[in-house]
Length: 359
Image (cartoon, rainbow, N blue to C red; front, top):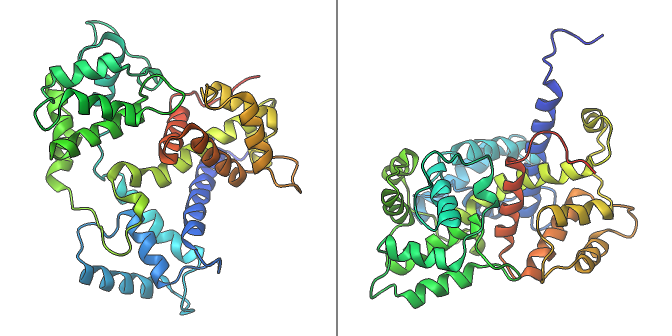
């Protein structure tokens, strides 16, 4: 008989906590560059920079802040920070980053879907956009061209030729059109070429559709300049790229576990028994098919080779870290930024139901 004091969604909460810890540990190991299973002062600087905790600081303030945080985190005085000591500041940074500047918003998703579907900023009257429709859509070149023209983005500094080049530069190899994440990055490139802030560019675009994003307007008022000092990593120089690391890894883990649960009669029982961290080859191939990763650049044969390359010889299946490596190789085959593919896969989980996919 179940304990009435335990809520029915108890195991869901446990799973969510485990996912957050797994994401934090992945981040921790990434910055443990010397393999000591701990983080020293210089490694802490790079970790804090990637988390966005150093934004708005000059070099003097950064050094003082890192030293202050190191003393606080090194509770046992060992001279380095262990994972249990690190997890508190990681979680605090992630919570704070939920309010960080991002051009992604429901209003922009609606504009994107309308451009993909109707080649116009506004959807048809009375048409309801279903959950995930914007994510399933893809933006063709002619819609991108029409957007740049109708939104008055084109100028002497940003010609039609440059607009087309931005589109082609952000289109993934093997795909004909732009997906939503690519669209966001392309808007950032347009803003940079026009010498303006990306948030301001998006506000202008939304105005053309008679839409307003209160979240973007508010964040414009409170934004801080990005930290670009000695601890700034080359692959985390922009808002969009920085946001990828924790949120996307968590989403990717969720997607991975959904396909690990294929064929399980009782998914919650399988989760409690920790049977969500082994992926057979056929499940990996199914994930590639269902997530539209199979194309002219990545065939089924390519996916099979990637699976075999990432699976350790002493293991019968992929674990999550092996799967993470497979996604890296997949991005290289598709000649697209790894962060872009990672974010796309993590977003797919959000539009699905909570039940695992069926065979």
